[in-house]
Length: 286
Image 1 (cartoon, helix red, strand yellow):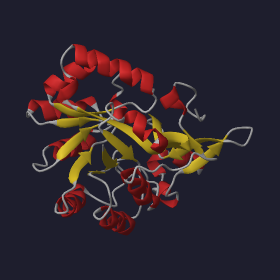
Image 2 (cartoon, rainbow, N blue to C red):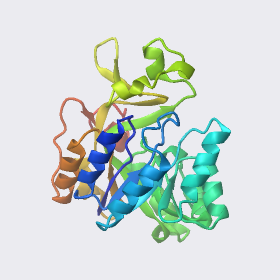
Image 3 (cartoon, rainbow, N blue to C red):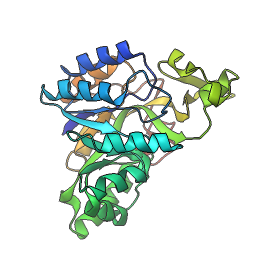
Image 4 (cartoon, rainbow, N blue to C red):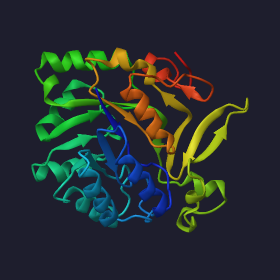
């Protein structure tokens, strides 16, 4: 089993991001994802900054992957996507079909991110032929569904052609919208958001009428209200999953990686969920 550190989904100041990745360099992560995948207005770090961090991380033996935007809304964002794909040094996680088109047209391998919503072996075969070397399973799929997809991939002879990665800890990215919910929560228009999401380093919690954590608002991204926790499922993933991904919430991500490396789990408690993995409502514990 290998362990990956997902790209930072929240909007953090540049100094905090750089400090985080200095720690990541010494962490138990085998793979580290970098880049802005949520909102192009978040420009604390530019591509040249991420490339500098990537080159530094690579000196410690980590595999570095650049994550692309999920929702492209302007020509400038497409141009930035091309710069990510043409970086010349690092593998790219494609979070949009435009990225796959760009990468495959240059015969470059890529990671198929969970935002691509790949649910069957036919799509996996198509993307493998286009250069996919790793598939990050959609966050809402269950273990049983994954078992079925793997079996179908074995039947058509492609299971050993790519790695399978599962988001295993952190708030889950569930949906993206052209609207900015964080700006709306402050009664601001998206075009005049004043980058207010930087004031919420772990997003804004929304609660149900019963007072339960329902969602986390993170700019245009809606995330799960509970922290997804599959750390106790590591043994059941052996032989099925190649990589367990931890999403950065804070510096605690490094402790999670350490415990996974030591074959230990984070206890499921209030504020956690694992329902999707067990094919029940995602907010619950199975």
